[in-house]
Amino acid sequence: MNISKFLLIDAALAIAAIPLLFLLQGDKRKSPLLKGSNKEKPLRKTSIKLPDKEKILQLEKHAKNQGSGIEFYSLIGDWKFVSVWKKDIDEEDPVFSSLLRVFSANIAFKKDISTENSTKFSVIASIQFGLFTIEFSGSGALKGKQPLLAFVFNLIELKLGPNILLSRSLEEPEEKQKSFFALIALEENGKWLSARGQRGSVIIWLKS
Image (tube, rainbow, N blue to C red; front, side, top):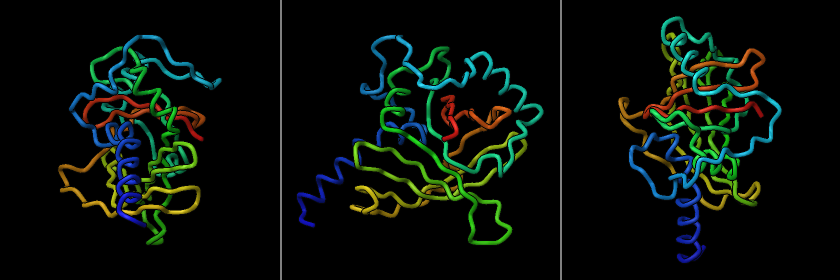
């Protein structure tokens, strides 16, 4: 691959990954690309009733005091991002949520099979744009009563269909800088999952 093609792929990867990176890394900085220009609620193409912010806050209070009851095996599977609320904002962030839906942002949890009795996850977060897919791969584990889902990514790949165009290793952050989601609630039939990111955003996923 010549240098111009390499730089073009690199640039595409960096630009397309912005929405997912802001959410997963919990970046405090505000990007003008992610500021909503109106308060119109985006359409949700699902018949599943999602909780509102008030309900989420009630569930979060219970999870902090009593635990959410979310266990390892209940998270296994593919989850698509459908809704995001910024910290201290009572309305869904329409632009940010729409970007994650448009790019089919997804996070998958699989049992880590490196050891027989492992309670660690293999974690893959991805976004799609046309035939291209960007994947962040790593590992995670549940910690504490609520619990927290702590995770780290060590590989990023740009794919065209099943073909890998670009692959890069990522430096593992120090323990205190690792990303996490504070899990809030799992719908009784396992259809939706809610959590709060380390910088305060509230996220809802739907089971794929």
